[in-house]
Length: 343
Image 1 (tube, rainbow, N blue to C red):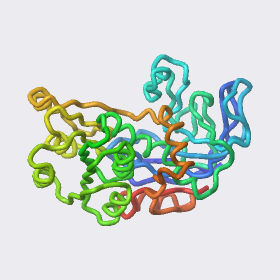
Image 2: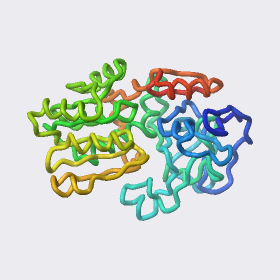
Image 3: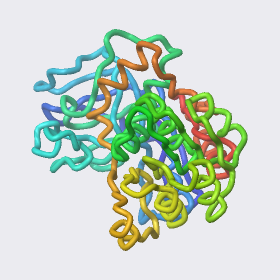
């Protein structure tokens, strides 16, 4: 099969890899229908996270089950399935508590136990604990939105839930990537009365508005803080979604939070220091982390299938898998919000 392999900074290649096969009773082999490039994939692509040796990459995909191990019970060959961005057993105490991204037996894609998601096939263990089948074969028009449930929509939802967004709230979303935009959609879906998106890019501003943003702020840093405070009569936001993971984004998140608010953070932290004194003096909480997308999948899948949400609009570019390197370049250069790949 063909699969994407990262060799180092700015070096991704589509290569021939061994065809996957069932090794254990809980395994499944999935033929990929669609996958995508994640913002977090850009960290190793840009050299921010070192690549010590070539490895398969990609952790978001949907597809059709080709084969299963003898003990798999929840999916069968022919099922269309959504794969969350980590492989979890579904039975450990953390999984049972709804935090599958802290599974005691967690497996990452692109490891010795699971293929990378940006390929033609993926073999993974713990099929019962990981894969979620749709009720029947979905229309192809729904594939992009179902694909977002493997990561970005579930992660945006986790940001909003971690920030304790409730009906009537004023919410600020820091970050206009796919996760931030899905955070806007999540906050709106949860009943926020005012959703303020921080974005400097016109296409992303338009999509944020379509997803429910009531206000757009293009400034950054101190200017963004001042603009939010002006919008909120000097009070700040009831909930803040931090969807980037940089020092500046976290600083802004705390500066625009009102006293007693919670910052829901889902951006993978890089060089971030938590302002513990601010948290103490203003009773501002911090909650979040790696999103347990598997826990949110049933609810969000029902919303997608019912037409209540359309998060697939974050994909503003679609490429054949053969052009995966061009997809990475487009996202690195911010010419694309998120790239969908078709094998």
